[in-house]
Image 1 (cartoon, rainbow, N blue to C red):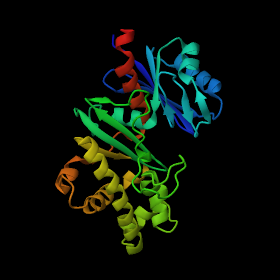
Image 2: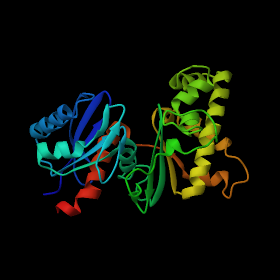
Image 3: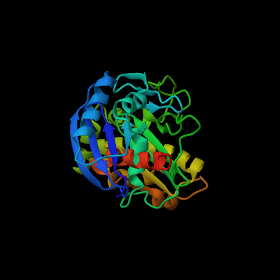
Length: 297
């Protein structure tokens, strides 16, 4: 018999629960409504889902929208209203199984390392989620790289404009302020990011100009990240990435001359996430296997 893992994606609206085998294939799934600000209730939900599952799991992986510090295991999530909750410990006490937690961008990257994913077989990659904010994750040596306290990879908050717009994090000029979905809406005069893309497809020149300006900002960040990490892949996920090739073309056209790499190199590295709706669950399960399998063998 193989090992079966529960992969859980806790979002602000829904909690997605899946059971996966060691190859990352989903065998079972349930979705329930999330409960914000009540970690004990969330732990009870997960415990009930595990009990009701037809497949017995030996470990649990969880992805959350927020920051998970090690070794304290504290979770800081504004979306879930968890101000430093040690959720892993709460859940382990209820279910008697080992739990691995990380943020949702790390889970999304881990899903891309599975067969069929955009990072399968790669040693190095940078993952960016272009959504309401910007999430990030780094793959180094074939494994997610998180720094000494599990806090590395907050790629939305490296500074691309010194002294620029003030970010919710407290700093000024963060990448997130210029390359998130909110930034695209700002460039377009208040049009929602999804509608900007739709109007570009219909030939709207004003929205095309907004997209070009936005893509220039994304390109600035991508160039800096490529200079720092020289990854085999730069993967774009999140809502704005649904623009696909339209966005990709504009980003590549905005790559400036003068860096110690070519536009063709960036073109070879740039790709879009393939994980789909299962990515958060599948990636969380993969992270649990990577980090807990040996100690529980």
